Image (tube, rainbow, N blue to C red; front, side, top):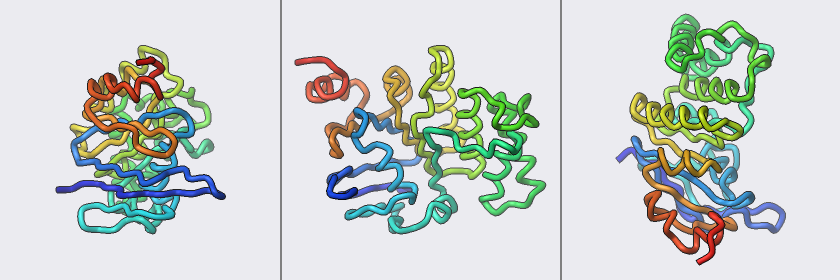
Length: 239
C-alpha cells in the first residue's frame, strides 16, 4: 500500500522533548486530522514529515523507502507536499506566478506550468486574481493560493498546517468541501492540522490527538470526541 508512516519519532530542542515516540500512519485517499493544544508538537511532526526538521530518533517511510534525512525538495519530488501556517507566498509576484513556481518545481516546462497554474486557479475560483500581486491578497485568499501552489506539485500526500485559521464560519464550511474534493481529485492522503474542531470532525476520516509531544488518542471523529482523556486534556470537558 502507498502509505506514509512515522514510527517512534523523537525530537528534542535544548533538553526539551517536543516529540516523544510519536507514530503516524496516513494512506492515500485518507484525510487524517492532527489536533492538540498549542505546544503539543503538531507542527514539529509536520516539519519532520516534510523534511524541514530531522528527528532525533525514529524513522519516516513511504512504503519501503526511508525518508527521514531527505531535504524538503527531495520529499516534494517524492510527492510529499506541505503548506505553512503563514502562506509564504512571493509577495512581489502575481498569484499565477506563485502557483506556476509549484508546477516548475515538479520539473515540467514553463508553458505547461503556466497552463496548469491557470487551470488550478480556475478550479479553485481564483482565476480572477491571477494577475494580482500576491501581497495584495486578503488573508483567506493567501491561504487558498498557498494550497494551489502545493497542488501544482501534484502531491501524493498533502500536509496542511492550520489552513482554516482565521476563516469565518461560511469560509470554513466552504473549506471543508474543498479538502474533501482535493482528496478525491488527487487521490492523495491529506494530513490536516487544525484548531477548528467543526472542520476537523466534518471532513476527517480519522483524528490523532497529540498532547505534550505524545499521542493521546487515534480514532474516528466520534470516538475521539467521546474519549474521556481527550475531552479533559483538549476539548475542555471534565469527566
